[in-house]
Length: 218
Image (tube, rainbow, N blue to C red; front, side, top):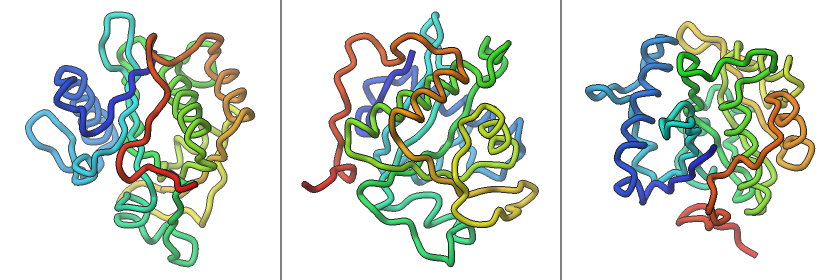
């Protein structure tokens, strides 16, 4: 199940936000060894102050087992402002119809292993939910910076994204800037890869109403 939290509503979900930042520390700092900002038990960066939209994969106990963050490319974001060397010809991605996905993290120690599936349930549910939000909001593409392992995983699952430039090594990690085209095909691919046949959004969820910075002009 996916819970959606707008950045300006963080104070309403202290337990979930705490678990999210702890999971990000576990994945990016402890497991992957990235040089990311750490405050106590949290991985948190300046983009968390930009009121992003968080998608949280929740297990049956109500604990966070996966997360991703959405930001519009019309404001500050990781691809344009942290990893410009991954941009094609150094030209920023800037469009109200393109959003950025960042901080995709899944707890593989919390019963989210893929089993016979190409992707874990949490990963697939996050992708499906983000695609539903994008289609309802008039967004055509998501861009993301992903490592080579995730790039290969998505390709093997039949959910590969299109690299928008040549990969580059950032620190010890080979990274790609990629673009996902939103739509029914993406939904079908991730549902097949994760074995998902059920609605992924939290019961009672009302479709995304874009907060400031996410609006698309008519």
